Length: 102
Image (cartoon, rainbow, N blue to C red; front, side, top):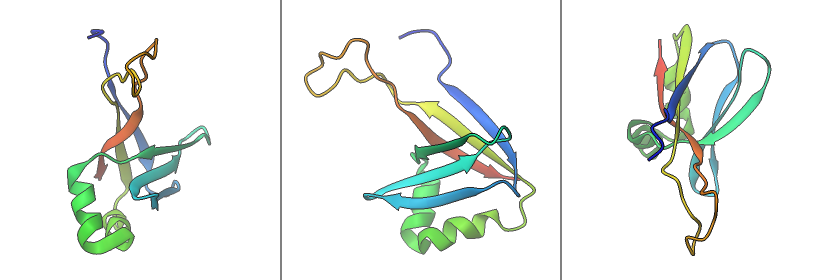
């Protein structure tokens, strides 16, 4: 445990590009922030995954309709030491663990 925060957020106008896609059976989100930097992260949010499983990518796009802003929660996974546990330093991968459509 590091005692450091592992959760942040990116808030974007709904007009900014945000896309959902299936990347080798992993639901993924890419977006371009206000400084025109492009990011792509896997989605770990259960609610978004439920929408995707029942309605597909169109269901996720439907959630954006009428939104003025998107609030993307970006978090770090627990540190992972690799398959043999011998990676130093351990890796903590970033992921989208929630999206709010406001």
